Image (cartoon, rainbow, N blue to C red; front, side, top):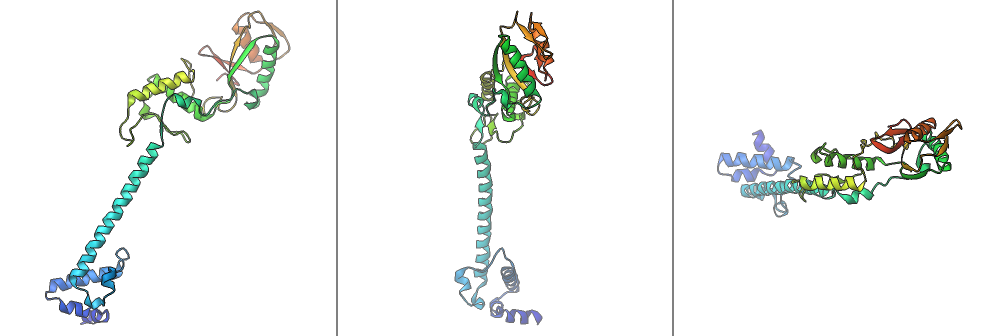
Length: 277
């Protein structure tokens, strides 16, 4: 009796009175309440909602539910397609490794771009060797971490010390070390290694070691790469203003140390820094 009263109050009583079988009546009642209470389904179709609710047939209600299922599946499909498209577009934004990367994130060759205390030390050493008539060619002072990242990992790949797939990403450097296809699924490791080798040669690295980004004193403006020549037989004043006769590079290295400009070593003959690293 209570159910009959509720259905009459909802103006759906005649709908259920018209149902011939008990199973249809139960299914129709459950569907109606689902439509009323479910925000996902919302109101019935405009053609049905324009009618008196008591005139809805079980077939119309079931048709509406089926339509809503189709719409929900379409929404899910569109969401998945959007996610896939976003993933694909992000992979397309990555540019394959290769020689063009060598001109990006350029290093400085200016002493003024260095920081104290190394800048002051280097200026005094530079003045002393320049006054002695030694030729100086500066190739790098400050180096951005992005450039160190490219130099280090291109060298690691080219020297077979790291697989292209194992290279970590670096913020602001949208490089594809693996040379993936447009779908981002297939890699060309032959091209990847060849491109890394081109980059290593483009940077002029040769056989010298290359620090990881953030670990090079070039990144913190406390190092310089410079080529020194025509120094044998020259006389230079060290940091204590004592004249020093340069018989070999060892003497030149010693003078540099007196100014706080420390030579790295024979593995990287052009590299001088605050602590030798």
